[in-house]
Image (tube, rainbow, N blue to C red; front, side, top):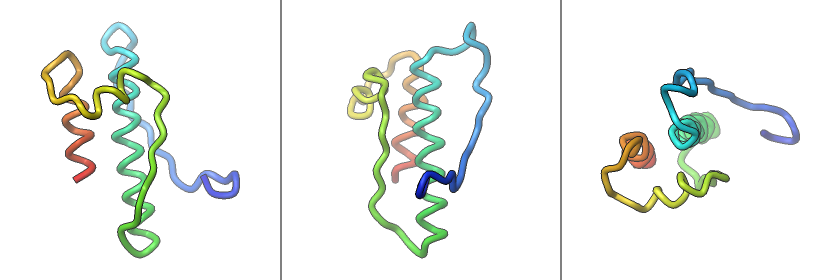
Length: 83
């Protein structure tokens, strides 16, 4: 958002609540956010520092854990998007 105005948005249908967890949904949201931030930085003429806020403790804690757990493949994708 910029000045209360939505600049870009993205959606992704992950599946039903029976198929996926809140953790998976939060991490997919983080992946989409990184992609949107990168698009916006490119549109503004180059790489700049970006900030991403998240309020899911499990997702936040797993950003620095490199263990194989259910749904962690999404965190691997998140890390790859940051590179």
